[in-house]
Image (cartoon, rainbow, N blue to C red; front, side):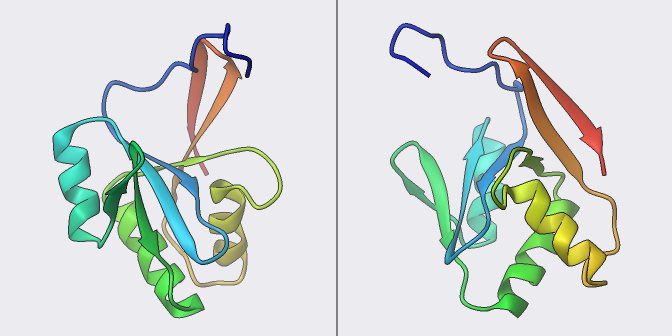
Length: 115
């Protein structure tokens, strides 16, 4: 995105998980209530988003389950995007509940689907 392009459209409320691979989870909370829900899971504010360390595979799986339970949206994309990480753990039998995925058709339009 260049500096002349508007930021992508976002839902008015909800939690969007933008990073889940590696040693941390990164999210955007659309409302103070959403941010409070993430805070209860150990997320801390950092540079306009909220971040939580991931300590182990078991910790990542427990976090994914908790995020699904509070209705978080996992971003779609490539290279181990959050939706792909959740699908990996689902395929391995660690996640059994459906989860929601958000993707963008263009900067002004997003799509939410259940996976």
